[in-house]
Amino acid sequence: MSRFLRRRSTIGNEDDDPLSKALAPPDHETPAEREARLAAQAEAQKRSDAIDEEINRQRLENKKAPKPVRVLLLGQSESGKSTTLKNFQLMNSPKAFRNERASWRAVVQLNVVRSVRLILDTISDAHAQNSPGSVASRPTTATVENMGPLPVIPPELLKLRMRLLPLQQVEESLLRKMTPAGSAEFEATHLSPVTNLPYRNRGKFREIAINSTAQWKGAFGRLIATARASIESGQDIDFDDPNDPGVILHACSEDIIQLWSDPTVKKLLKAQRLRLEDMAGFFLDSIERVTALRYIPTDDDILKARLKTLGVSEHRFDLKAAGNMLSHDWRVYDVGGARSLRAAWAPYFDDLDAIIFLAPISGFDEVLLEDRTVNKLEDSILLWKHVVSNPLLKDTQIVLFLNKIDLFKAKLETIRFADYVVSYGQRPNEYEPASNYLRKKFALLYKQHSKTQRIFYCHLTSMTDSSSTRHILVNVKDMVIRQNLAISNLV
Image (cartoon, rainbow, N blue to C red; front, side):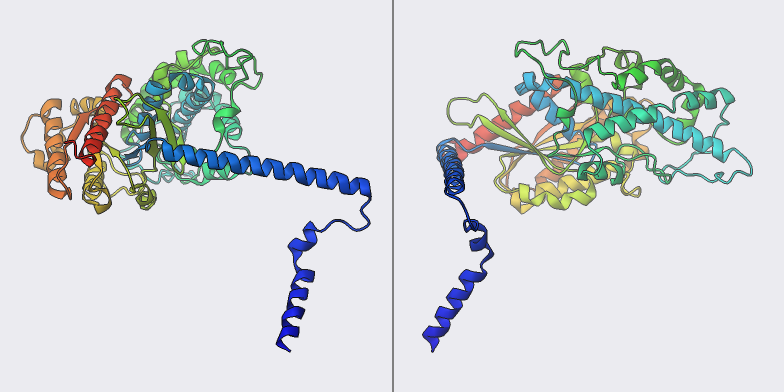
């Protein structure tokens, strides 16, 4: 009886199996159709075998190849991680870096438009607040505290605002080209809150957030017929494109310059504590150059350009190394720095060779946009303490970059450091003593909370200065060499 049930069950499975039905030859198949089907199956099997063979070959090569060097960039949002990554690319893959000029030209254009739109929205807010009886007379700025009454907007400035409204078309055109409508990346662009510009209730401003896996760089420029085309000449940029956003920007350039130099705008931005010149992607001081019809981004422009990506970015570099002791394959990971994204860091802590931690010391008088009760410098210090005390990272060497020293120097000319860092006391309000004070504070935390004894590497940097970034590679190489020698019991 049991043997009969087993046989019945087996027969039932064969008859009902959808996979068997899908693979079965079609009913009433002719000899010619059968021959064509078998030939197609043989070709498909041949391709499958070739793929398996390639996978096995790569697996064997990976086993023979030296272990890649893995470096993780950490720091809060807007700390300079993406700029550091671009510096890595510029130093180690300059040809690939410069071949992307067409793409970064579009990002620079987008940065310009967004800066202008922020000013225009601020003008609208001030005008609405100063209009008695207006329905929109209440402030619409959700995260910016006014320092006092806003200046009255003169009629000429309102006319200037109207003339610059066509820039909204430029923004939409660039966004849709980067992230096609209906895609996840496009939705993320319009739903993610800003991190480099104040959020407004009317929803006009959103942080540009492109998925790290999206091929947005391929949406701009044109194919070059010859591989010997000059990467410096901008031949990959299609200047003859009738839909080039640069045409509208060029037409509006004089009005943009007038807007940025307007004394009422200066007073308005100061009243709302907005320093656009301190934000990533600021080009309003170079409008005549970046809005030229045949504008080609410089290396410095690309380093300054701001484009946020969603997810983790992995970049590979082939670096020269001393002898055979150090792998030439370096992999640098950039993870999101916003507080809501930090829980996703842990999976990348395993088997790391080094961490580059960026702390923007210029933020001593600023707060996090995602939590305006938290001071930026305080957040960096707490984050530093968490990283150096993490047991998963006890054997990982760390390089500290006290970043954005150019902005730090500029702020000390008008802002008293001790007003925000009370423990600084009566020390001179100058760059050298203030920066040394911060270096010692970070060093003390490193010594107190490290699980193992490690060398303290620290540099005062400005990531928009490519020459200063060369210290990164020198120090990371030095650390990895020391680590490899220690593992080999040679030191």
